[in-house]
Image 1 (tube, rainbow, N blue to C red):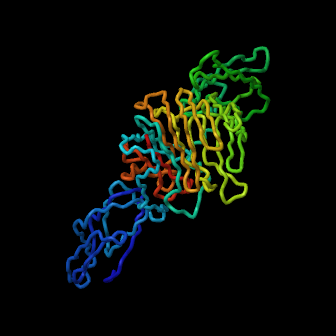
Image 2: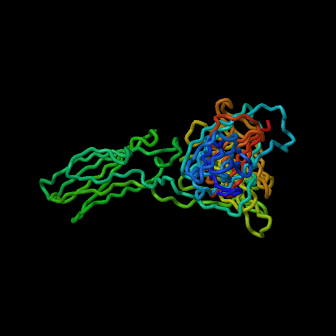
Amino acid sequence: MYKGQTVSIELCLTTDTEIKVQKLWYSNDGESDLITVSVDNNTLGEVLTQKHHKHGVGWSFIQPSGPLGFSVYLSEGRHQLSLKIDKIELLLHNGQLKNSSECQLLCFDDISYNYSITDSGVRRNISKGTLVQKSKPTLCAEEDNVNIPIFYDSAQKFIISANHPRYTSGTNSRLPDWENCKMAHSLWSLQDIDLSQTQRVTQGSGAATLSVTVLDRGNQSNLTSYGLIIEFSLDGPSLGMMDSETGSIIKVSFRGMINPVDVSMQYFGRWSQWSEEGKGNSIRLTITAFRKERIEIEEIVMNNRGQVVDQSLMVYNDSMTKIEVVDMDIWWRVNETMTLKTLSDGRVFQGVDYFRIYRKIPWSENDFCQVFVMYQDGNVRLLLGHNRVDNFHRVPNPRQSDHMAVRPAAPLRHAEIDPKELTIKLTYLDGSFFLSLNLNVTLNETIVILSDAVYARSLASYPFLTFRSMWVANGNADVDHVNVDGLETRPILSGWSTLGGTSFAFFRKCISKHNTLSPDMRVKIID
């Protein structure tokens, strides 16, 4: 490399990290040279090479420098390392360096949230609320693995708002991504069963246990009957699942059969009053075939039945607002449903699993978009007042969900909606209620103001709200950072266990391939 020439190397960092040049390796034959190392045009350090005059032989001797310069902190994403050198050693703290071809992140380190609450009723001397980290890693972009309960000793009034993401993107990825997701179509599967042997085996990762008994060897006929008892457990609502409460289909496949086989089934484990969720399931298959024929079962599998499309009903419709109630075929809270009353006409609707509110898109004659969805389990979804986004965060809101639960829930009993004023009154199954939930929708922001709360449980032990979302990696997330009071910003899944403040912003610094334009979320404690 000649005098004045520069070599640039792209660094791809998958997380924020500290970087330091540990050592430079160089060769020289001639006068001393000044070597400069910089990152993103900021100088890290310089070193003066040793002078050698060995008639060209010196170029073959590679020698190190000592430590050079100082450490710098770099955000995740792409950075440009520039140098005039033969070899360089870098020390990375808490970071991963990847091949530049894999670096697709576009991150903006200058994205921040300032502490500002416009509500005139804010008390400036309120105590701090506490975020608690309950999240877990995932590889599935459709799993809500971000789980952050928020505790506060009063929580009489607070604001939840959805805002445009702070970055600008020319793309808007809106489709689900099921890559790396476990699709639980098959509940259990037993394979390669030879009925010529009386056996008791465990298959399917312990999901089901099989016992085989010869019932009748057909002394008076050419037939033999076998009894197969299959015992299994299924996940239920306590684990956030519906398998124990849903119908299923059992399929038996035989291998190499020539003659017809008769199969009948009985099921056991019915309880007259109470049952232990998902436990004690048992079915009996009776298989009868010609005595001389070997019976081999290729597979016995139990699958979830298919789901029926959700049934929706329009309960309010004017020039600006539409409201629908929805009955789901399979709802994970099993037999829990809520009622909904529209104050405009006094009608009450039974068996509601969730309801959704639409607002008219300003530049359209007839188009509406969803801005608010509330489920019977207390989950809330917020959207902005246009149709660019299909998916968003979930907030079990605003009652006290069990923060130790696998799937946090705050089940509702009843909701009353004033469609004209966009106000909602909520009553929960445990007796908690909110006298006022006000919805304010604009193109730039959707705001929910909640006030006049009565809690049935202790606020010291149960959160008043839980934020749920998804993070697989920066660039594949619905949220990647949290900011507290405009002062402290942390990665959403790591580097903290609790954070205290009164204003919390959940947002992205990196453009995401998943729900690219889904909104940033803010929670502001007012009283």
